[in-house]
Length: 544
Image 1 (cartoon, rainbow, N blue to C red):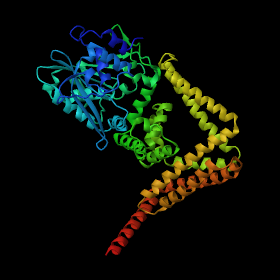
Image 2: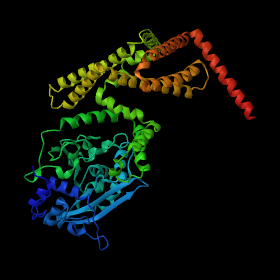
Image 3: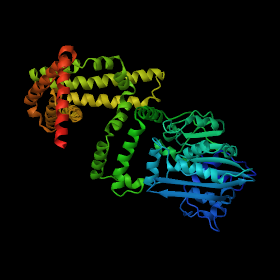
Image 4: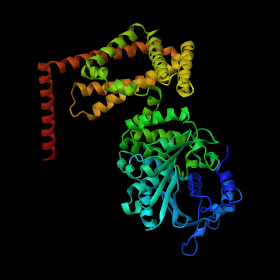
């Protein structure tokens, strides 16, 4: 496979008059945006090889560019770089003079700065300062009676598309073509995606086989090409790895199945997480790195144990845990959980809160009576249910793909891993206890947390209030204990927990019956209103 560096050497002596601009030139110029240029003489245009400030000797790509007539002698102008931690912007753009009155405007993608990486995620919930800068840049540099090609890589591709969509009609008429090289599209919740119609027929999207970034908020662009890469996995995002064949990009047969599965999960996750939830999650994650003095992506990846603890703490405190949890949920179960939440079964359960009390009562009695076996049986059924569902879901996806194991290999691997872990847990009693106690403890802590939220939000100290106070305290203690306790204490602990759950279930049944009975419900709610009024009067008298 040949590379863009090979292409530069092949076309070294040809000017753009002799060999017209093509898609590979677009890739070369988009790559050049990641280098730094300094224009002298009041910013007048300079040749690329004279304006670049990076070291040439240790960089094969840049060395080939500067040694070539086609690119090294290319005139560069209007270099704009904006970087601010205060406003959270990382932006760069430049203009290359191709021939006559035709120019290529290139936008830089994300560099190694933490500011740049954060701005990528910010695009998912609001318009960024880089996007606004792209519009201002195009409005400023596009001149009458001159023609332009606009492009960029990754975030730079997004800026090219966003800028072209938002400039005035007169300026847009001067743009001949737009290249989005593996860059995300416009977020539909924050941008008017109908603006894509203005540029759809003059836009080319180029994506690697293992494509992640270019599939985010992707638009239906007819001229979309999938190209080969000499790298693997997520590293295929790097432009210098993309394949070239006889002066054109080397076209691939299709997307990598692994990346398609990731895109499917990401798409479903984004659909389920609101812009506000995305913002809270992004801020909590980057706050950890920023607080520890990280200024680059490389710094942020060097988190120690304390850093991981800080990250978890920030995610929990920002209430982003639910958003994070949806990632493995989508990976394992697809839309099944969402259908369960919104389907007939969910409506039936929501309409009959009595079921919660019955379930707690039955589980509690089973645990209290069969103290020695109940725990193992319940955990086995739960884990077995996960394995059975994943098996059925995997078979369904294989059937839909006409048993294409290559395409669905990631899903098959997940099932094999889950089934293997389940088998190990069944065979090893110690593993059963560790996994089971973790699941049970986590579930009890969730129940405790929900009860805590209910009594915190309650305005009246009624039966439900005190019930939730007691539940939050007892289930917190039980949850922590079952996670930390040795297996020898399991028998008597199951007896205590079973009794507690049975009492909780019976009280829930009684409360539901009271709520359902019109006579008792009216009396109960009138008593709540009386308590509220008495408390309000007491506060008024106290203020006076």
